[in-house]
Image (cartoon, rainbow, N blue to C red; front, side):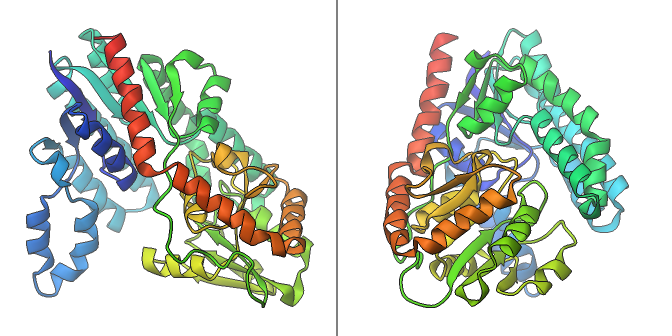
Amino acid sequence: MTGPILVSTPDLRPSLLSVLHGLADRKLIGRVATTISINPALAGSIARVPWAGPRLAPLLRRREVPAFLDGMVDNIWAGELLRNLSSRVANEMVTDTIFHWAINRFDETVARRYAGRYRYVYGMDFSSAATFAAQKAQSGYCIQRQVSAHIAAFVAVLRRECGRFPELVTDYHRRILRTAEKHMRRRAAEHQLADLIVTNSDYVRSTFIDNGIPAGKVVAVPTGCPPVDATGARRGRGSGPLRFIYAGQMSLRKGFHYLMQAWRLVAFGDRAELWIAGGSELDMENQIAAQAGIRYLGHLGSDALADIYRQSDVMVLPTLSEGLAHAVLEGLSFAMPVITTAASGAGALVTNGDNGFIVAEADAEALAAAMTSAMAGRSELPKMGQLSMERARAWTVADSNAKHARVIVKFLEAHG
């Protein structure tokens, strides 16, 4: 076997690239198998093409290979290309079928090309079953990256919420529940084959242990906070209505429907506003429009969202199932008090009563009580926000990457 590590991932999302940068700095990566990646020079040339270039530029940026991975990437592109094309023209059933075919094709190709060539495989959740099986057959080791709660925990939450709120159930939710058993079987195979599972929060780790995964092979490395914003949020200073900000998909998983219930309960009138930034999987536009004090901003780019954060006072995210919610990390980096649940994965980054409020999940009354406390204690919000900023500075992306690399090195040393 040659080494040190083969990374197998269908995409190079920013959060993963950050982790890989930390591993590359330690010279731990031998090869990265992915679907479609583009050399930055080529992406720049395409982006300059009249008419088509500007339209393709955002897609190209998401597929660019950073310099630290130059020469390490193997593109297994055919399945992903078909999946992208089908998502634009086919119905949901066909798209879902092609998605699973593309994931299986990628996984099986990685297994065929690389199993046994590297002593260690670092694979992503839901795309590593065949690769892990082939790697173990060659007496290799498997490390899995996990950035969401155990699938059984998530499905249990979704089933509960669909039962409580049938009027909010969509075809998307039905499709998830219809395919849940197949998804759980695939993930169960990966979890059993993995020698080490690296989760992105203590909450995610706890859901794995609760679902029978041995505690000794699950390690939590919380995601780091973005750089602290130089301006920061308003966090209760000045006059005018207190402004709560919800950032993220309006979904059952993120508990958005409980936020709507809580907003009715608090009845702040003109003393407060709720700003909502993000797309939606729920048909709640009429409910949003019917409630006073709500401003729906839709999906925003990063610069526009940063400007909204600076105008806000309190982050609120009553999520029911996460890995570690990026919105919470952003709220801390913008020096905001944060109202959220333990299921956000925030862990020690948000302490109840210090720099925010941890409320019970799926409890609109508890959420309303926390929002009322923030309103009543407006004069304390600047101090709470200052503590959020200190937490963000104390746990950065660099800190997270360094700990992640240490975990991997320790595992390699134990199995070298």
